[in-house]
Length: 73
Image (tube, rainbow, N blue to C red):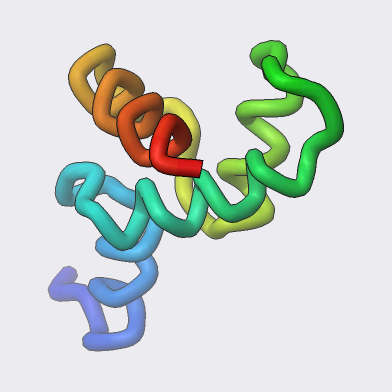
């Protein structure tokens, strides 16, 4: 069964084709809304869901890149 174009878009948006800069920016924007200077796993997962990105698609290298994005703020 082939995918419809809108389904492929959702797959890409959720990060199933890899975490890109726009995914990192969206998650970082949500994390920056969380008070304090650190986030726990539940807060990270919630920020990902609010950004429309599946947190289970993050690898350690993606988390390192996310940290670099957050360090800019």
